[in-house]
Length: 117
Image 1: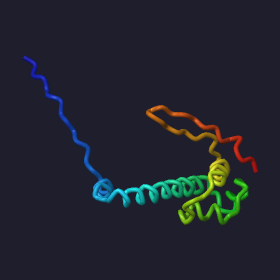
Image 2 (image 1 turned 90 degrees about the vertical axis):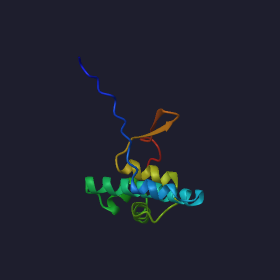
Image 3 (image 1 turned 60 degrees about the horizontal axis):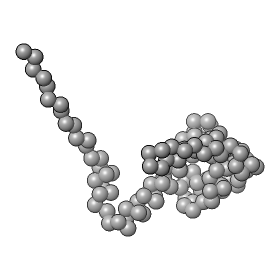
Image 4 (image 1 turned 90 degrees about the horizontal axis):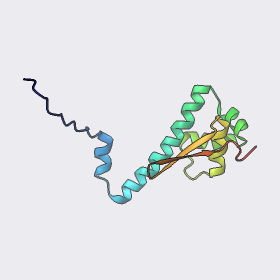
């Protein structure tokens, strides 16, 4: 007789960050989420600049923005940048599409023609 094994239920471990966020007040959670979004943008810019060995000045020239804007975005110092500047920097880094998601459906946005320098 072959004995069947019962399925094992595996519970995902909660990260330290998740535990930290779970105890925040709603106001503090919103502040945390906003800071996290800024960090993600900053890290994306930094990672691609490093990968492609692009300086602040070179990216500014490619994007058609001032080096001050690039530096502020990559350092996370600039919190409220314009979408125009953001798209220019993405385009300068070689991005052609963005993917946005809604209700489980993905929608590609072609940014290759936006904000030509």
